[in-house]
Image (cartoon, rainbow, N blue to C red; front, side, top):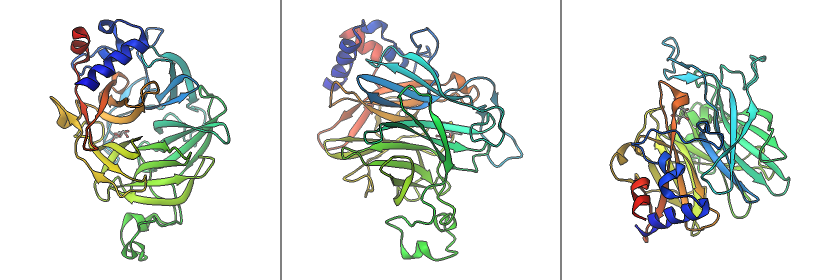
Amino acid sequence: MRSILQFCSVAALVAGLLLSAHPLLAGSDPHLEKSWCDTDGRPINAHGGGVLFYRGVYYWYGEAKSGRTYLPDCNKSWGGTRVDLTGISCYSSTHLVDWKNEGLVLHATPDDPQSDLYPGRVLERPKVIYNRTTRKFVMWLHVDTADYAAARCGVAVSDQPGGPYKYLGSFRPDAGCWPVNATAADKIPGAKNVLERDFKTGQMARDLTVFVDDDDKAYLFYSSEENLTMHVSLLTDDYLHTSGKYARIFVGRSMEAPAVFKHGGKYYFVGSGCTAWAPNAARSAVANSPFGPWTELGNPCVGPDATNTFHAQSTFVLPVQSSPEMYIFMADRWKQWDLPASSYLWLPVEFKTNGTFQIPLVKFMNTATSL
Ligand code: GAL
């Protein structure tokens, strides 16, 4: 309880706002369907997003979703809804409450049907990291065809956090390399496993996140092997490519929506199961190294509807700069039949004395009123 109150009071202090009128908190109550609006009063449009902190400013990047939601195509193997790709949005804030719309930092290219950025393609889960050596802002994205068969990662780069980002292209990671923990059986030619099947062309990459460690080494976590197994790849020093050093983690556990953070020298993971836009029980894990071994900790959510992550799916865990003990679990509440109407759920991460953590469904509005 102490940390919940601490979370709220710090948010209030930082925001300098009355908590009863706190848009962050309103957006965090799953029973309130109010939009979380930017400083122009428009609903924030940054789905599947992540946040970068740079020189006193938080930058929230996300999928800009607008227009019609297309129903599943019965003739395709993929049966989910989708919207046309419009680009990647960016919002900025100094205190995590009021967000200024910085516009699209990466745009769709409607004139080029061959481009990854053509509206009929898929561009998801943008995550931006800053490279202190090259001084570039590097965006990693899940890039796909409308049927999700391409399963690639894309990279874009900028000299400023607020863009514009130059799209460098997409690829499947770690082509021609075996993971550090591959077994002899995995490597047998024709072994009939997805890892071996994709060895030459590169591994499948769908939902992803990037994490920068204290030593400036960066890691890409991505759902691979037909979403059955997650991979973690060390990035090259410029953060623009995978290095060829990678590991299989959560083998056969079908996890996606990865979010990774570090606390007290340990690495923590939050993700979901694979049920497309429909919510499921969150997964969590802890490790002493990004490459693992990872120990699963189960569903960290506690409270009503914890079994479906309070109707949401993880996208990022945000370390609050002013308070090293405070992390915010960021999740998307997808509306699969009207994707642009999808909303957000931000909750505190509470660490427990046994080295695990939980994500409580805090009735922020109520908590705020009692403060
Ligand atoms: C989810 C994934 C989302 C999006 C969606 C498409 O499983 O987490 O990012 O790809 O599937 O249905």
